[in-house]
Image (cartoon, rainbow, N blue to C red; front, side):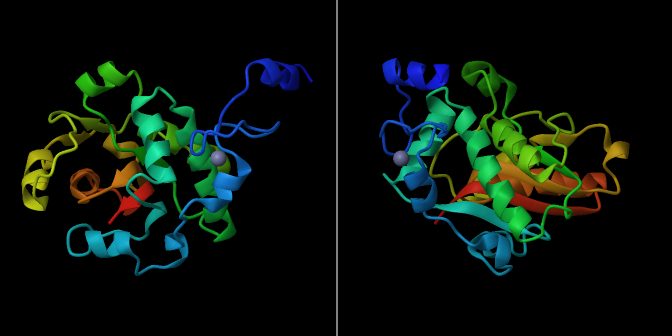
Length: 226
Ligand SMILES: [Zn+2]
């Protein structure tokens, strides 16, 4: 009741459509939650993410929750997640994707969820890694542990540029290292990030994990940019 009363005086707004949220809704209204351009990639092995990584990174499952559309609701959510100090939306979307994966019986598939790390300088600027929150949300709904202690970024800040696929990959190619390898050797890791564009970052992270000797790799992102 106190929460409802507080909401009356300090209403919370949906981060996607700016409508006042109803009781029980957090960060996203129910209308938007069901209206976002969801993919069905967790049930379609030959999807656009898989095609993008094909021949570059061997993965079991390649998934993205939503299609990214310029000026659309997903772009707004990602903007809040990365630049407006609203990391909690990452958790909400992680919960959502976890529920869908569970419905597709993928909950026993992965052993550990690993977020793509941010460069320490960017982490310091932003104060958080948005992918950690997506990983946490997935972890809570799938009941699978997550960890940001195994994959480290050692160079190369992430930028939003129009570099070529090759240029981008060369820049991030050796940017990641894997630590405490022995504890994840026999595991199937789910590598997660906020968005897949060229796939260069996921490719570099995934290659580092596979080179370190993990057993299997899958990837999941909040959005897929076409
Ligand atoms: Zn909304």
